Amino acid sequence: MESPLAPVFGAVLPVFGLVACGYLAGRFHIVTQASSQALNQFVYAFALPAMLFVAVYRGSLEEILSGAFLLAVIVATVGTALAGFLLSYFANGAGPAESTMRALNASFANTGYLGIPLVTVAYGERAALPAALATVATNFVSFALAIVCLELFVNPHRGGVRRALNGVIMSPLIWPIFLAVLLVALQVKIPLPAERFATLLAAAAGPCALFAIGLFVSQLSIRAGAAASWQTTLLKLVLHPLLMAALVFWLLPVDALWAKIAVVCASLPLGATAFVLAQRYKLLEAETSAGAVVSTAASLLTVSLVMALLA
Image (tube, rainbow, N blue to C red; front, top):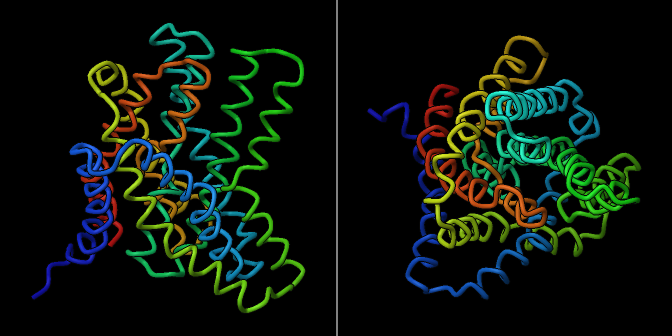
């Protein structure tokens, strides 16, 4: 008799196995740092945008405009970020800029690189659309808000917020979704060769993104920031999915499958993009990199537990 946890491990282990391959390739210098940057750029600028576009383009307008689902993602993300900010500001006595960075570290889930491949393996291709919508909501609410706040706190020169917002809007993780939504709303069908090209490119996103995460983690040191990152890691892996579960299962009318995907996405570790922001603003770089490493390692257990409970 097959164990009820077999489907969970059948989905989780291959996904994290690809992450482990990337980690080992980086640790043993099979793939150089230059190659790692090239792979990351390919995923970020080509494969992942194609996956997001295809996922949304193949959905219906009713699904895309699922208000309850998006509201749950936004409220859970903002709520967790607020908890991270308040904990840093009042309990740790940090300034507003550092507290903003910790708010991002507590709430910015790795839905793009890790979430979409994971839920697609676990729940099938139909799971790609809600995961894509969760990605864009996470980027706009958590990432964009953090950029605006950091511009105000760290670099309050004239026009900084406008440039920050323009950067978010032009992000390869944002505009393909807007384009797909527009095509669906106007009922415009793209030529079949173009759709097949996007589908072929999208197929590379999952494996390459997971391998890239492993490479990213292999190049970081966790010693300097591990002790400081445990609070945001706990908020990310525990508070965020609990808050999401309360919203999608009890407070808001969300489809059962979409509710599961929302909780799984909320249980994911800190997204690697947060480290890019930490480097850009010279804020909590060691702590943020450690948070990415620790939360990614711990999520193998926590995501498996969440998916087992949802099964």
